[in-house]
Amino acid sequence: MKNPQWDLQPAVTQLSPEEKNQLVNLLSRVGWQKTGKEIFEAIMFPIFPATQSECAIVRQINSEPHVLMLYRDDEHYTGYHMLGKYILRGESYEQWVRRTVGAEAGLELVTFEFIRCFNTRPETGWVPGHQMAHFWYCEVEGEPTNGKFYPLTAIPDDTLGHHKKYVDCLRAFLLRRTMMKVGIFFDGVARAREWHWLCVAYNPVSMKLLEIPGPMEFQTLGEAEAMVRDRFYVGDYVGLVLFDDMGQEIYRSFA
Image (cartoon, rainbow, N blue to C red; front, side, top):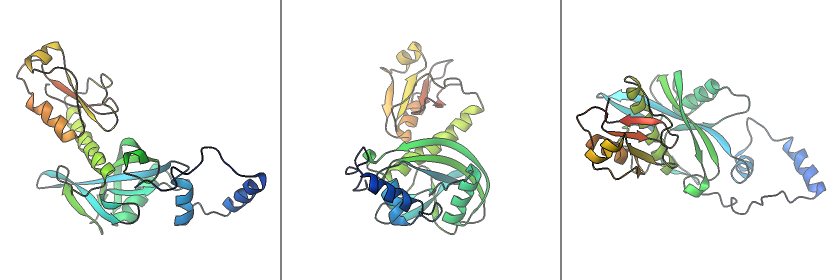
């Protein structure tokens, strides 16, 4: 998955003064809108982080949230993923997201909401170059010209590795929306490691009654959510709080 040039690229530019001048002159002729695949990949994958959108198109089907997934098979990715496009020079957030949902699935953007950023690096084995992805929750009009809707808890097994994590974060976003109705009180109290989820007992009484030895970390939201729900206790201020890797409270097992 990692671009072959990633480990070969020098940390410091190794060009003669003449070569530098030649390169600068050549770059002045590179298009910012239509760069060309070979030129784009030679610059972005091994040298500079790229900024891309990841757009979650969610639809309720049989009272269950489903997300639109596309299939891709090329030299960089093979598997299912949500809609995404690199940002173009001069684009606003709305222009960027609108272009993504239109180009990827023929949909018309109605409104969109920021979920979070992802700092996804080649060391994960998921991406060819360093990516700073902006994740958006999108409401759209129309029927998609590409892809299929899947339940958030039953996406295809061959979904791209980073998009499995992104769908977990989409589920967390929706869980957090539900929690907002009763109040979010514990943001910043604890934080999971990157790409993980953390369950923390509300207090020492909770640790004892729920038989929790200490903070528990999980790789998937499903595992963490099950732990919180399974440790439900009928009593005031006894329970677990679930945090993401940004320190946001996602869910708790008490009001």
